[in-house]
Amino acid sequence: MSDGATAPSAADVSRQVGRRFPGGEFVVEPWRAWLVADVVLDEPGGTVAHPLFVWMAATGAMGLSWDELFAWFGSTAADGPMFGEHETSIHRPLVVGGTYAVSGGITSADRKSGRTAGAFDLVGYELELRDKADGVHVATCWNSLVFPRRH
Image: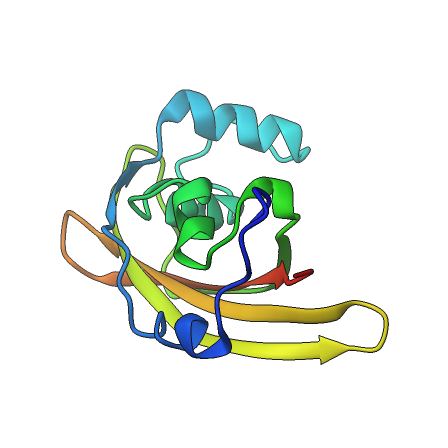
């Protein structure tokens, strides 16, 4: 949209609901687990990964870049999309050295309007993590993105 193009219609945005991410795999590398623990003032070196790894794994292995995801909604980083809400459900802690399969997709997409912000699209997406070793569903991340519509 930043190149002068018009915003997608509300119907175009709504049609993205149900679209699946390519998905992928994420390994909780020991060196990365150590660094994350150190940064958040946790004790580095344990066998259980810090809970931040759920979001890191989910978005790191969703199978497309942020720019590609923004393009699904006719937007670019220059248009100013914003992170909205986030909710993480952890059913079993991620382990250092573990490999996780990530899958998910778009769960909602609504055109909204604010008094000062004008029109924007609120898009929800969900990502699930499954332990590759036993297939158990270990966590879910639900997030939303806000796409300003200035044109």
